[in-house]
Image: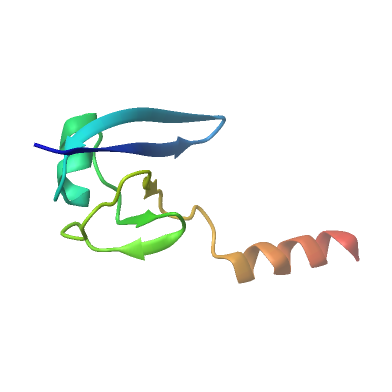
Length: 85
């Protein structure tokens, strides 16, 4: 059976965990997460594009596990602007 090589990346403050995997052709995002032993966050993506857990994988894909934002980007900009005044 043909296999594909994928990478699973999970970022945490100050570090990133990366796992290179070889999976059977036809594998899905959920299969890659299970094989990597990493829990999925609220969102996952392939090369920066948010996808569902049942999305198919292709050889060379990078599965990214996104963590929730600690602060709304608009609120962060407001706080920076207020500090500059």
